[in-house]
Amino acid sequence: MICLTGDIHHTSLGTNDQRYIGKNDTEVKISCRFLELIEKHNVKTTFYITGRSFNADWQDLESITSSSLVEVGGHTYSGIPSGNLDRLKSRLLNRCPSSHGARYGSPSSQGKDIKRMVEAVREKSGYTIVSWRSHGLVYDRHTYSLLRQNGIRLISDEISAKKIFPEKTKEGLISHPINVIPDHDHLYHAHRDEEFVKKAKSVGYGTDAFGAESYPVEVWGDRVLERVAEIEKAGGLATILMHPVCMYLADRFRTAERLLKHFAGYKNIWAREILPLYEVIDGTG
Image (cartoon, rainbow, N blue to C red; front, side):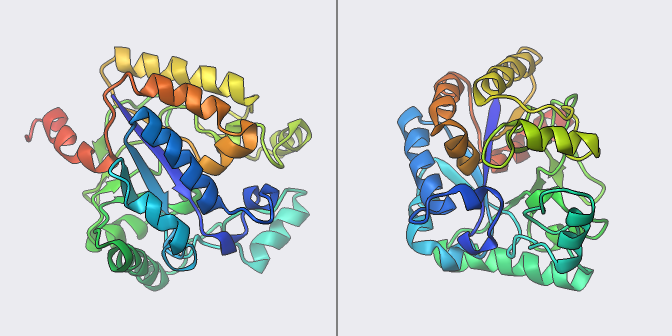
């Protein structure tokens, strides 16, 4: 069983990946083209989308949110843009500036951001979100309680090479870790060439549960399929992260379509469908 997910960011956030998009293109428009492949292969997908996209990019985003194969999840309203201190720190450490800040903010500012995220989706689409992934996986000890207070039930912030089942956090959210090698930090694309990755590794930057290595997109795709097969054999839930913009920049969706063809052969679910699944695993259902 798989839960395919992807993250989408508003145009004005100006992420590193967005700098490599053509001037007449946007991340949301690219995600619309990714949606065409999802619909071609009939694969359910949960898209975690920044709240500002529902205002600034709504003309293109509407086709994504209205798809019968898409669940919308929260990805912070603002996208946690980098501040001057974060950019200075990156320069001092000889790193490419991050596409997001290192801190989500005070409990008060987090609460306002989460509420704006929920309201932006509801106002534009009439949908009430229950699933969340923090942009950049940036959160603190206040975040999950605030999410719970705003109606969020599911979280996908952890990267794990070992966990194959959802579990409950102390705040009462159901966590389903990204347990298949994620794309962005393990994929050569855009600014992330061999020189960039070598430099990042030398300063201990970019390591997660799947290590610090990056791969050509075809090799990365092979590793995804291997890991999904392992989790399926063990009877677990494979949560996969594929950013539409990464898939486009890496090889114009060729590997993405190869993976989607395989995913279509599995039972696939939205993040929100993990709630009743967890109750069965936990013995409470």
